[in-house]
Image 1 (cartoon, rainbow, N blue to C red):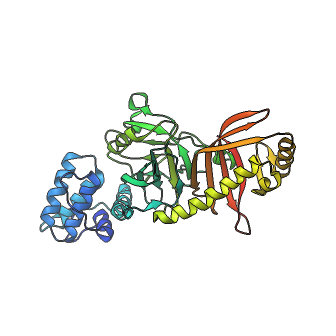
Image 2: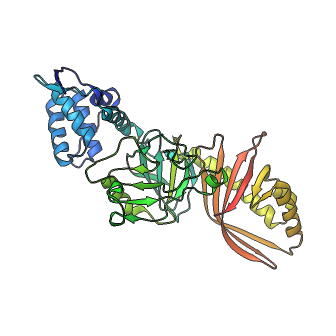
Image 3: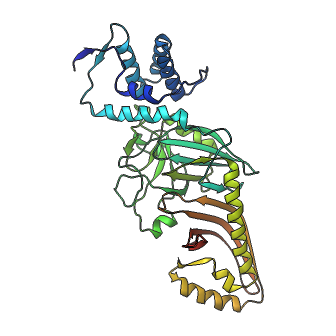
Length: 392
């Protein structure tokens, strides 16, 4: 490779300088914050401060390739500096894209108090949940308090599938879009070095994926090999990957089988009052559905189901006939809902809500408890109707 004189930033550093905002300095910055802070110093003309910060960062994390690349480009831009000509290096485009996404990371932090529009309600049995903004390569750990206040705990860069997102089939190298649960923890002693400190498997394909005939398996949140700090933005076979440090930091917040993970293609942050209004309207509709069932008002109950509804091998007509027959034979029906979660389902192509809850059913001759998932869509008149119902 040849050396050339340079008096201006190039490649990855240029990508950072175009969008990075000034980041407040602190003694205990994360590696990404330190990188952002160093570039902000460069933008403000403090080349020596940027150089010192990047030197410290690359010494602490010699596998942080982006930091080393930007440090090298910064040094090349100083008087008398030289730049290694990396044109043609296939890794450069990955680093430039990583730089662009990380520079957006500071802007990706939502305003104080804002909440994700994809979560209308999460029961207190889920004290934490994870959001991944797939287009922005950003993972958010959120806390869910008992009074339904959602607050951001931490956020960081995370890479996705080689061919992006929207998984449909095995081997398509895409990350799924949807709502999942973490099913366990696989420690590094049981895994190849590729997965770093370990992995959190997800329940892909979930019921919605199966309904849409999506195939594949082994979608995990996992770390990176020991000689790597992070992977390129699009580099996995469909998993969400992150630095080992960030992966391990998630462990105290995750409950196996319970912690929701939302992989979103269109994450939006909105004022909490906006979510509150939508939540109250939808809860009222869900409650009316429940009460009509309990009152054995089968006609009004069935009015909540769309004509395209399916469940357990039955279409709407078959389901309606079944409910008329069963409900008419009961002397009483008692239905209770608890642990209610309400999500705006991502990647559905049209507005879709997922209502997930524990249902306690009791009648004069039968009782049961199940975890139910209802998928709701708006009909041509704008009314929310159930078009799919399953037990998880």
